[in-house]
Image (cartoon, rainbow, N blue to C red; front, side):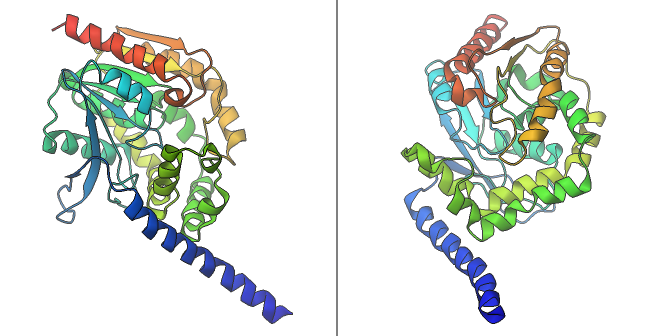
Length: 327
């Protein structure tokens, strides 16, 4: 009986890994990259490391959507398409996400900002930019804006993280919580995420949801999330060392009405603790700009681009109008 149990224990992970490998191979043919792959390799890296970039529409200034932690270049589709009727709109997959190549084992906001800088240059995206980050993407957008205020026409933070929030969250994290979060890599490797679909993508039954599941439930995105978790101390140091946000930069801060989706399944209790401070920290961040405003979006969850895409588009178009008037 013990021998049978051991065989089952060994066989299940192997079967799951085979299921994962065959699924990824099949999906790679079904879902080719819809945008361009841009080499963003930096000093000391291999000769090529590519990020996936999608751009829609024409006009200036260029609007760049920075996705959430589990998001991709395809996120906030309805909002991006609405704004693209008025100007050029770009979105991209950060390292290891979507169709982009993986990065290092430890990933800080500084590394992600370096990637964004090289992506803009090598894809020939011309400043000034309006940055529209969601969730985790706020740290990259804020650090870019603090490093390059002359390249920013405006910021629209969509329930996005910021340095004030990072200080509060980082202070509550410990090594064990970070490493526990990294176990999700193993779950992806043996097909557990794909099989159990913790984000409920399969039940949506739509082609975009199937494509999202195909690109998200892989080892590379989960490795990236682990790398970001492991890089939180470095991120804190980078944000502390960066110049303050230039007060002249226009800033709109959108805030969720309810915390649905604020943290992944399994971390809901942690999400409730963070949500207790969320509104206050968003308001305080908006006040860092002399031209900063904030608003709660009625009927929205954390991913406002999904729950209330028109509200996101209106905020971006408001910022676009401001930028064009000030030229």
